[in-house]
Amino acid sequence: MQCGRVDLKSAPYDTIQLDRGPSWLDKDCSQFGPPLFQSENGSQIPLSIILIQVQLEAVLWGMGTAIGELPPYFISRA
Image (tube, rainbow, N blue to C red; front, side):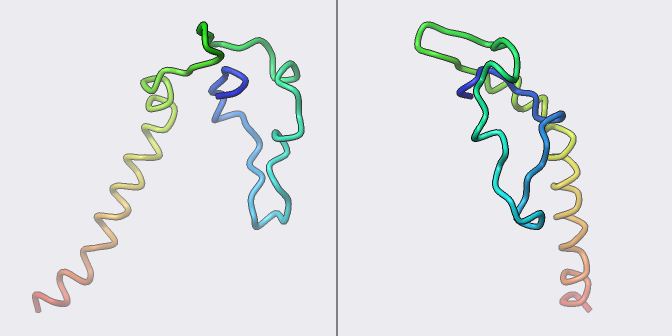
């Protein structure tokens, strides 16, 4: 949001498993390129753009959750 970009798919994933913090926190916004979204009050990214970026992951997460609930359902029904 601060840099006005939503390059979620190309961002490097720095996780707890890799034992390091987010590397993008220490970088200047100019290193990522010009902002894609701007407004008078700083950068604001439309929610619709963010939803498009995570649509596939959200659907797969929902399907996985639903499938994960099936075994307890069938066990309790039996």
